[in-house]
Length: 525
Image (cartoon, rainbow, N blue to C red; front, top):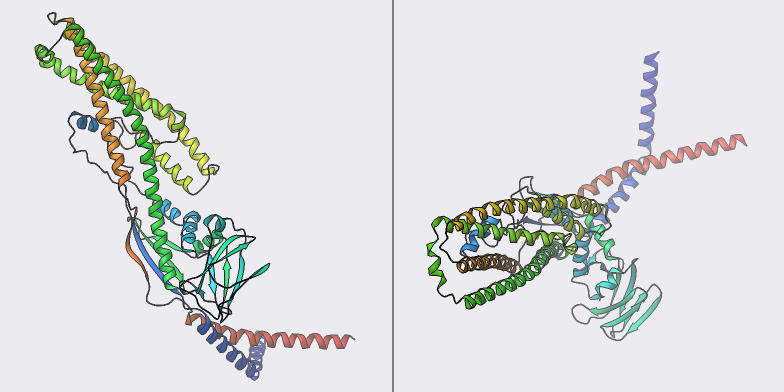
């Protein structure tokens, strides 16, 4: 029984094959049509090329090394941890997101003007630098577009220009011309001098729509997990446009990064300027107090009188000066952090314990991460709100760190002053005037040390503003790869095979089913 079933299936399959062989004309017609369509695809579809570029992301490096000597101030700078080093780490995923952000692509598209597409009538090929006309508008007008619209421009042999928009028709005798459309004011002009007798279709699209489509067709990949290299590829049938897109994208990214770093440096310089002015005022007051005291007590050449202090006293005073300077720095930090307007500003690293992983380093890294998110989003973004909550918790740790540092310095200063007082008590021969003078002199030296510290820090920030820091260094400048990526002959061949086999079978199947339906209908009637 099973053999009969198998034989019946074999016979039926043979009948189907023989049936389709008898209908060979359908397959030949489908083959011819598919050949024609494939040839039209290969001839009419614009040649598409792949553009490539690669960059290396640079870490922020110290502008001024710790080996620069500035007397005692340089030594105190090193002990206080006032180096200009940045966080140093690069998050590749964050940088890829920054490169592929809609905001970055929008600026690139506005600069190149590629949200305006120029095509000849009945052509798929979008013109770029070889377009005879160019349409421009200010960035505000381009950004305010809510929908795409088309213009049809015709230039006759006499040089008369006719512009047809969706709701109006304008005629001009010469260019440039001003087009006042419902979407805004646009300027139409010849790109490379007047030309006559041509037609051109112009499509103007919202910039963010073009950016969205371009991001989806753009590829940004890291070379490996252990490197800071990124590779960029994009496809375009216009070689120069693809090269300009890659080159402009990297340049705008570098400009934005440099602008952000300089803005942070300007904030730091503003803070340092205010503190330097206050320290200079304190220094002037101390110097005037010394002058008045010396005149009042008729003291001269007091430096020779204080030689009676022992080496132990000198060492003790040096330690007190150092601790006082550190205490002043901590007070400056405390006042800066507690100001409401500095809530989301970077905290200067002015504590000797500001090593990697300290609360101040962690807090500054979190602030930098929040600022990166804010570059491509609004303050209402859930990620920004989450970062604000995290920063509020970290700020408490910063307050605690500063308070602990102050408490430690107070304890140390108290111990040092007790030892100093013991030594002074044993120096009964030293006049009271000299002891008071020593206090004045010490205050002057403390203020001078703080002044030098702040001045050096400000100079380093000024140097950082004067340098153009390239974050994305071009390794391979944008170039066109050797072989086109479209139209693809493989796609044309697959289309011929599929069309030749599927279409005739489908047509014959539908024809037979239609005959059966007609026959069944006639029998029922």
